[in-house]
Length: 147
Image 1 (tube, rainbow, N blue to C red):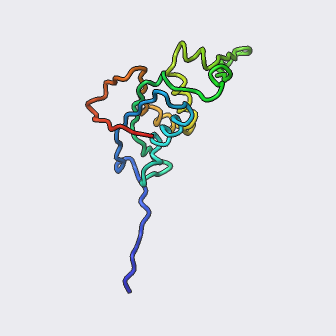
Image 2: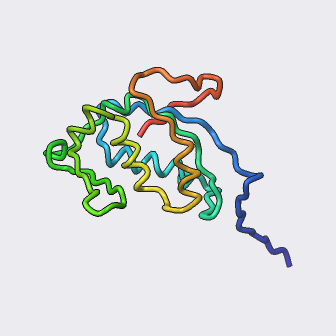
Image 3: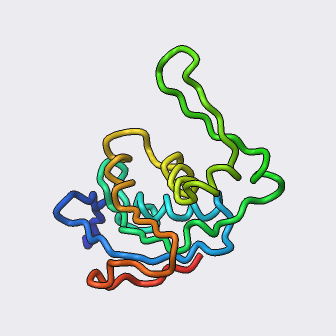
């Protein structure tokens, strides 16, 4: 009797093939783009995805300061920070952050969509963001990623 045996392949650190991708964020919506970037950083776009292994790719985001918000979120959305001391909670609007540090908006959006573990902290290190349309990662030969 001829039977086929199928095995589920579980990736490990030695078998992971990580690629580099470039994303142009100009004119894209923050949340939608962040969820797609988080999917690539986690590796869920690959058939070899394994939850306990970092199978994701590297992502370079260009024009990260030129993202858009839907609706009136630019004026209404608030970001909270807490120092750990009593009375140490501060709130700032998305407009204020876009004026001072525009990369922080995309970074916090992507970070919030990754796991809050050692694995998630390793995944966020594979994200590179730039305000302009130039990047210093030409040696890695990144491919353009369209969403």
